[in-house]
Image 1 (cartoon, rainbow, N blue to C red):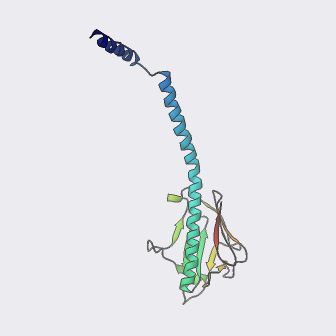
Image 2 (image 1 turned 135 degrees about the vertical axis):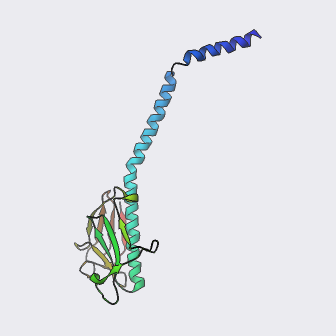
Image 3 (image 1 turned 120 degrees about the horizontal axis):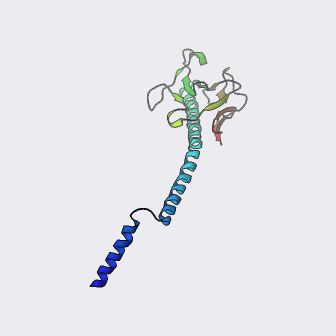
Length: 184
């Protein structure tokens, strides 16, 4: 009986001696865990901007396709106006009563019922900026009733249209077909 109580008192003695601090092994384990978590966090935060940039490019690609599909389904021209100062773009459709870009009306977003406007550099796209827009030197992209791309002058797009983002992604629109692509 004496042996078990002696083992118990000896372990109490060792524990009471340690109550004042941590062992070197415990400190090293904690420092290693902190280092690993920090490294993973830095890598995740660094790729967040690139992820947002890619998401904005995909969203714009979707919206360009939507504008083109609307032109085909309405049988009239649709337009996208890009505003780099406000970091936004809007979608419009020409009225059959008043043809021409000047007489176009805002398209409504089918999901919200509000004007189809997308703003970057805020919300889910915080930190993402449109750096350049060029459709034959203009900021308007149109589609005729057959889906062919148009420049601001309401003529067929003569060169590849380009929208560049701050993170390096680009959306390009082919002049003859109107097909749009993303490049990293």
